[in-house]
Each structure stands twice: as structure tokens, then as C-alpha cells.
Length: 338
Image (cartoon, rainbow, N blue to C red):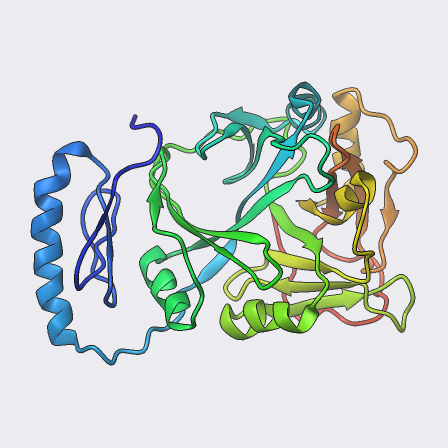
């Protein structure tokens, strides 16, 4: 299997991206060569597509392709052994080799994953590296964002045959978009506590700017919002436009936060059908309820339970559906499933 990044070649008039062939885009292109013996086919394919795109016209307005869900979330750690104890031990997730530069390990949650790499600044208080969402057309999505004035990195290929590029949202959060490949999937561990990462969240200070990016440009849609008090909004959940996974704004936080508070805010959540069964799985792996790690019904009416990695990053277990009426607002979208 090819490891590392595949070479990226720029075309003049068309976009040619595929894992095993070529696909036309909407102008101004990137061609990703996935095998060293494919360079001649790449040149011929780009020339053919350039002619096709010329006849297509230069005034085409790109449309946003689908954004389907969370692909992965990556964090930093100073204690990899403790991370493995949490994800591979208590939560029962299978590990897989890293596929991103600097990554050390991935933990598979169904077809999604959580990645870890060594913390470049051990004393930094933010351990979240980036979040990533899946799309079914990486070329068209990059073109769409470029047309909206969003700066995007070149499309890169990974060793699992996925294709991706990176942008930053208005507050500087790194956001990756991924078109998955057809590489063999890692078989989920039979004892895994969950097979679906249902949301990820991070601190947001300028909601209007973030809304313009996620709602107006990307098409994310409201799912629920609430707060510690009924008349306050501390959390805003926005579902991806073509799925049930969501991004959660963590609002009303101080400008400077310590490691513990940042770890609570910048988090992931895995879905479970029944919290009692999920607890039983973790208990069979040696977990016991203690301190802040205890099940409770959240303001959204769903059972939830928080556990923490050694750097205090929160992993929230959450039931897919509420068991009681939520505080503050009603749900306005479909609930996720296993």
C-alpha cells in the first residue's frame, strides 16, 4: 500500500481527481496522481478534460456538493499510553495506523475515527487539532468554496485512498473535508461502546461570523440550542446539510481558558442506543463511575456520560434520542441512529 501523500499535479483548465482514474470538475483544477505509473494517463486525462471544460463555458456557477457527516476529529496528547487505555481499553475501539502527517494512531468508531499526535507545545491549553467532514465530491466542494472566497489548501491523497483539503473557519478553527476511498475498512471491535460519532464541539466567540460560514455557505442547519438556564443559549447544535451528525458551538466562555475547561468545551460525542448497556460495556473493561464520570440527563433531554483522556479532553457518550422534553428549544432535525 502506498504510504504518505501522493503527488499533486496542477492542470490548466480542468479538475481531474480520482483514486483510480479521472473525473472532470468545474474549472481551475488539481490532478491527483495516485500511482507512480499513472503520470502518462494523468497528462492525457487532463488534456481531454480541459477541452471538455472549455466547451462547458467559463461562467458556470458551482453548486455545493453534499456534506454527509463527521469523518474524523484529531487531537494532541502528551500521554499516548493513557489515550490508548481510554479508547482501546475502556471504550473498546480498534486502533489503526495513522494516515495524516504527524499522526501516531487512530481509533475507529465505525467508519469514523479519532486521531492523536504528539502535542507540539506541551503547555498549550488547547488539545484539539482539527475536525473533518465527509463529502461525496471533493473537487466540486473545493471549487464551490473557492467561488465563495474561501481559501482552501491543495487536494491531497492519503494512504487509505481518501482525498482531502483544509480550510479555516472565521475563528481560525482548522476544518478538513474528506472524500473517502475504497480501502479496506478496519473491522470494528466487538466490544466497542459505539459505532457512530454523532457530534463534535468547540468554543465559538463570534457566532454571527461562524453562522455565515457554516449555515450560509456550507448549508449546516439548526438541530437544537440550549443553555444552563432556559433563557440563555450556551450551546448551538448545527447538523450537516446531508446527514444527522452535528457541530456544536460552545458559547459564552472566557477568552483565556485553562486545560481543563478547554478540554470540556473542545470535545467529541459518540452515540449509544442505551446508556445502561454502554456503561455495562465500560464496566466490563474496568471502568467505574466516579466524580464527573457519571450518567445524567442533559438539558437536551438525552442521557449522557462524560469520560476524559489524560489531557482532559472530553469524550461524551450520548443516547441517540431524548427520554424527556428538552430545555430551551425543540429539536428541529432528525436524530442520529447507530
